[in-house]
Image (tube, rainbow, N blue to C red; front, side):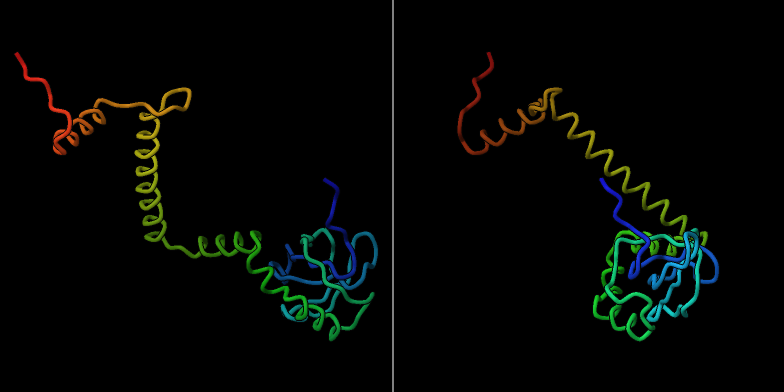
Amino acid sequence: MPFERFVQTGRIAKASAGPLKGRLVAIVDVIDQNRVLVDGPLTGVPRQEYRLNNLHLTKYRIKFPFTAPTRIVRKAWTESDLKAQWKVSPWSVKAQNICKRSQLNDFDRFKLRYAKRQRNKLLTIAFNTLKKRTKFDGTPRILKKDRRERLRAEKAKGGKKAAPKK
């Protein structure tokens, strides 16, 4: 798979360090191989130079001319509806979950651990019953319990009568 996230004008990046950590910015211009000029008109980031080492490039890119002023970057950002796209991206969802988890107190962590334990018990029971009812080759296995229930149902229906014992 070829590389698709290039350092280019209009590329959206997430700041990973410094006072802008976690904010989205648009690359406006490339200064040199280590620095770029960024602007984040809708995320509260003023136009400034930023090190590439402190940026994570995203898959999103907006179209605006080379070294465009902030008002044009803002217009392109709103037209592309980038905020809505970012909210549903797996990267954003994961970041929100990490933030939620970091805000849990001790009792909340206990409740979460207890709920996971209960869920895992139910999953284990369901898995073991399926495993018990399946042969190694994947075909269903008929258990004695199933045969008994089928005979009881037929007996109640008035179907085949059982032979009398001698």
